[in-house]
Length: 223
Image (tube, rainbow, N blue to C red; front, side, top):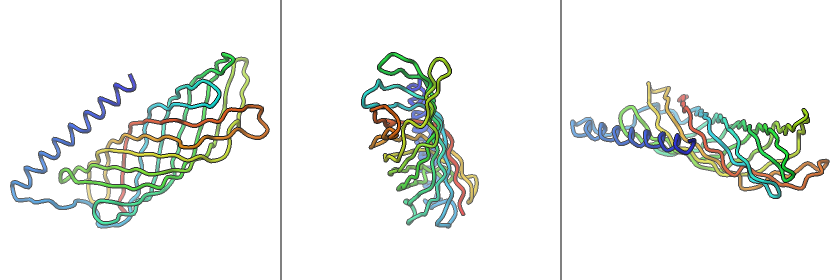
């Protein structure tokens, strides 16, 4: 069902892109010509968040899925008309059930903080609509990590340190004026490296989040 929802959202975005491009071509036919719409500022605040799902990849335990909600807030520096560099903070909240090699069920809650460094791009498909993309790397650490077992037993702080990964996003944004735009965005991220277990925990299982896929809102404020 989640994959179906992503497919439907992708179809809507690309359909909207085609329609907007047709409108844009019509405007050019009437002599309006192509020009960039928006602020001349080099800096902008970009925020996007969404909901979806993540996949936990274990070394020595079964993999399992988690529900995911994400939010990134970035400072974007525009280079030329199409591209930019963005960095800031990202927050992920993951939760769901899994089971270990002994067959014990548990409920897992994890909150992470990441610092991305992204290459951003945008393209005006109509006077008011832009296609927005980004791709880049991030460093990430765990803020909260709780595993709750039957019998009200909760174990926390099993994993520690930093890991690294790749993230990307694509969306459509509507310019309300030269300062503010709002739209929809699809995002995905996946860890390259694994979190190590803490030195005082008797568990030998490194772990990473293989993928997090979300869909949600996008907003931009030109400074």
